[in-house]
Length: 326
Image 1 (cartoon, rainbow, N blue to C red):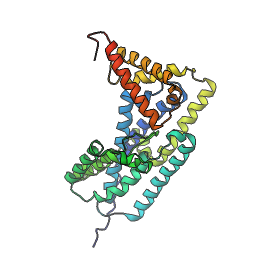
Image 2: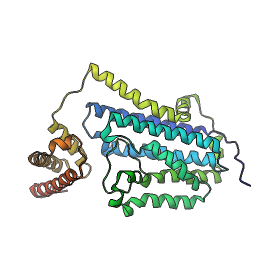
Image 3: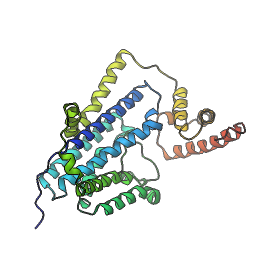
Image 4: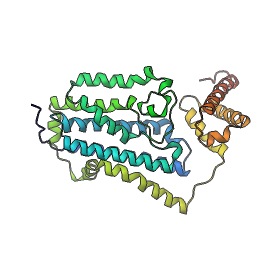
């Protein structure tokens, strides 16, 4: 006879953690909106500390999704609530895909964080009753998979959800199964360990103060907050842009800033300035600059840009004064 699901008590600490993650996401999305409207340098949120910030937020959401999946179904799957929640998340994911397809067709969200949570909610059921150690081993394998299993076979669009394609697909929010499902598995395993050690019972006994109620409320209604906050932020920035529009920069300046920002993650500023000027010269000479600025994802163009990048790297290294190579 299958186990009968037992009633469970909400844990304020988990709701608060989810609410804090939502606040962090709103901060990142506000920065992305400022970039989208031209108030900050292009590419700012895709490199450096902002990139780490974004990945940390996504990881925390998926980790908490794993924790919640375990808490809800470890003692027996609550099928009615499970299907209801899955339908809500999958429906919201589909709505985001449709909306972003019309808003930004070249980079629409075909497999973002909600798509990942929906699929992980199905795959994760296989792990909620397994030992925590096995689940953590599975998480490690999921993280390692892209390093060993990437192949041109997965370059077809219908395989992009796996995260194993050699070509990185263009999307405003791309959270494929490999490696991101590992965060969900980690949440399941940690929740299992926390319950066996009695930590969950101790957390459940802690009542949050009034100061934490906004975060707890947002955490209890995380899907609604997630769906609403970005349209509200975009509307606010759009309204501000009608009053104080951003300064218009030339494509050359925008490309140079974006290129230098990305380059500075791995090389010093002297190298990056020379390298990025070289890239502009080569792309303009080859007649591909406008296509790159427009975000053209043609494989042949990508190959030519990679060739230009390699050539500029060699030329810049050779032109750098001795002792300044890093």
